[in-house]
Image 1 (tube, rainbow, N blue to C red):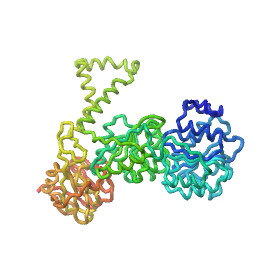
Image 2 (image 1 turned 30 degrees about the vertical axis):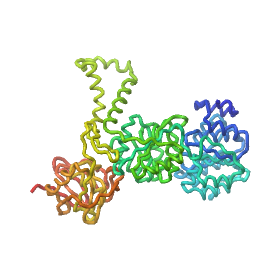
Image 3 (image 1 turned 135 degrees about the vertical axis):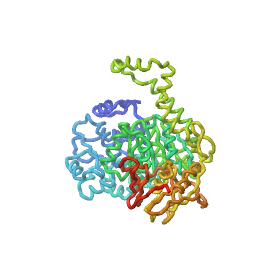
Image 4 (image 1 turned 60 degrees about the horizontal axis):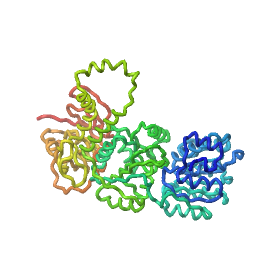
Length: 596
């Protein structure tokens, strides 16, 4: 079936042709003829990415009265991103319809400008519930002329607490209107809206309730909680062509994971509710332009994101509500394409995977976290394929080739290929040659050469605590520095008033115990460490894998050969000073390291 067979107006067909659309999706095939020719209420169950905007947008545009400058259709969406996207899509569909007026109203933008747009006369409003209620209370919008109300992502609007707002809005609309409800899942509250505000609705479904899309592969990796971030990096490196989204539970975790990825050299950024509208727009622009490789987001902030060709969705943590997994995974495999949804879970969370399987009616493939060999091999052949397919600009490069040939004439073809490939391969080899096996319960050799510690941890007591101005993050930085180990190798930090505990891999015991012989002082007290006999906790509380920074540490220290760095905020404050007297600023007093 083609769009030409759906009976749409000529002006509308021109807009569809300009967008390159030829064949409607299954949900569009069912809704467009029905809603264009029949007055009916509708409940449509369709997964994210199946073309829902056109499924309701084209019938609205096909029946709109251009000469009547009143609000004829109202579209409600859970987030400003989705609201703007719907508005833009419908403007593109109807760009050849002269006189068509569509506006979007949402929080975070000037309400005065939105009121001005409405007063000029609009046919269609796309709105978030909160802002629309504000406009209703200001008597800036009249919904008594509305013929069609669309509730897009109805389940998510209810999850976000918009139940009362939806009730208030729907009560302002005529009883004679048609209500079209689109949802990916069908919880009880969505069914309540259908029962209370619809008259014998037609039901359309492109799948079973809450079921996941068929073209998504579901994978889960089991990890120790403290190695979750390391597993994330390992997974990302294993998929060199990844263009994906990483979902976290909280705004704080979202920001921490994004900052850690950026620090480790990945092209990533965060999207969460604490960002201003301008910041959100900037991040989304970069992601849509593929300037970003990964977008780290919360569930709420990600609602309404419609970005083509997302290859992977990674659940850094499983959602609190397992039904939200359907929404997360629906960010990939859009418009009939395939995609991969990955869940990183602790051993104790494996049972939750079974709950999700029952809801989405799909099975997860349990896989082992790739080891160093796996990653290096994958990256090597990714590089080979890139070289094979690279575009050669013959004219532009021709004048440089004689000098290039002259410089490389002593190398055979085999030697040249080896060196060219090694330029990229060595970077991953050097990083992963000592990489541990991150799979729980695995002991043995997991690096490229197989050499790594046995993964067991040792717990230490240190005579520094909150009274010295430390919190968990600043103490982690401090210990890592004086023990000359990576910060991520200090984990399960437990800060008390005058002392603290921390853990590190057993291979770093000598590094830590050497601190006692170095006569390191902090606030006029010698820093001492002891191996703790306290029973180690399972899992630990440092789920970020030791990458988190930030906090409110106080104190100050100086260490010979160091560089200037503020531990209180957890961020590098820049290199400063010169020679061996460079300092690390800690705020209150001086930390000195002397040889006696």
